[in-house]
Length: 247
Ligand code: GLP
Image 1 (spheres, rainbow, N blue to C red):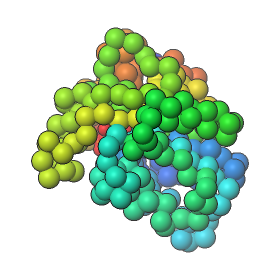
Image 2: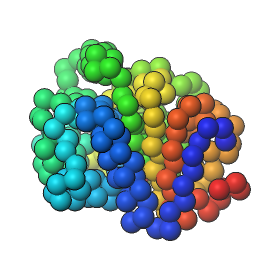
Image 3: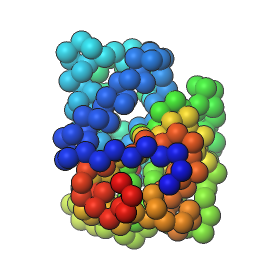
Image 4: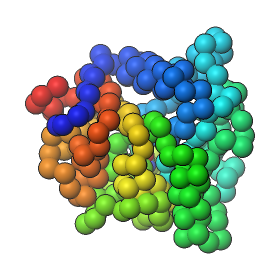
């Protein structure tokens, strides 16, 4: 477990507060910071805290640029389960970020391969990502980089693992409505970010957290690659940390 700073918070609220503080510090250090952002249940509390800081006047996103980690392929932008909808609903509509500074992969592109290349180029042209916030799938995925035989180098079209389809079905009326494909930053895209903040809460994440932080580095558990990143902060609650031997 080289180079990782691991913080175990008492509960989800404390974890969310610490995550928001880390993001806020980055923006205060560099008001033009480039952030990488995740969706999912895990970061919701962090977004709520950041919105609160903004409404209280202590944090502005005016010059911040964001890149979302991933998006489903084939959901309309207005679909309640598209990650675009999630981000506006839970974060962007409540802060002062400029519309032109928001980047989310277009899951409806007629040419998804081209969209992936263009998205990766946009990240490069923005100067790279200063702080990437990540959640972790129950199977150890990051973004939609599922357990596989290799580490994908850049933004690509990815097929969802059956276990991820099942995990995400809770947001849809039926499992058949869950998209099977996504556009996701690759492992290489994530590893090129200057700093990473990994968040995980709840007992359900404990095996994946243990594998990611203490197991061998392997594409079979994509989050484990973060052990090779030089600047990772991990914020967990006690449930997610419960199988760690060294935290
Ligand atoms: C999703 C997303 C990930 C997210 C993960 C965990 O499938 N693609 O970016 O981190 O699953 O989600 P949750 O935070 O809801 O547990």
